[in-house]
Image (cartoon, rainbow, N blue to C red; front, side, top):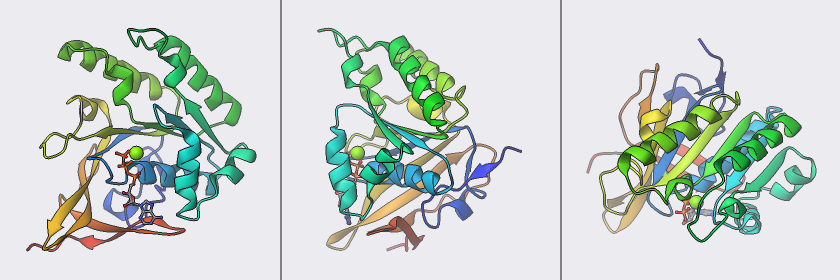
Length: 235
Ligand SMILES: Nc1ncnc2c1ncn2[C@@H]1O[C@H](COP(=O)(O)OP(=O)(O)OP(=O)(O)O)[C@@H](O)[C@H]1O
Ligand SMILES: [Mg+2]
């Protein structure tokens, strides 16, 4: 059995057999504003406290904005960046031409060199969709995502990839393939209760681990981030 790593998400580890399996890749999916980025940051920040440096791959999102938003949770990313425990890697410059062709080889060799330099143990790719957006044939997208996840798993890092779920859809991901190749899937959402929404988390798939397919509720708390508060009560 592979060792488990503590996710840093309060209340999650006991629901997934003690934590994420070291070196495996997981998908965090959800509609916009469901806390995919907070979840991802929390995994990396907790990793740093465990002596596991982290690499956060952004695509189309300014890392300065992520730093600013994290400050609202009392997370001082700049401090960790200065200490070289945390690094942002912006994948946007790797979209080289008007066809938005993504330099797969260059990008992943750059990522691997950061893993080596930092002795990185946790990676976040938030979100994965733009990397495959130029392909329109299902089979090509599927192969491409399979290739990315296969490569990430050679790095021996515990990795989160995120993907958006189109609003109102029953899909688990934007491309419809991201969930196939990962070791586990966590779906973040919002469920209506009376006149307000409640934040929910569903452990949808966890290979090799028994799971309770109950929606959990969670809150966002300064300093702590996502805190699971218990099962969603049926209306
Ligand atoms: N300091 C905070 N305290 C409480 N809630 C917060 C705080 N900061 C952010 N949030 C909540 O988290 C939500 C967004 O979280 P996050 O950016 O992780 O979502 P996302 O799923 O990554 O969204 P996107 O689709 O834009 O990438 C916000 O809409 C806000 O409600
Ligand atoms: Mg986000």
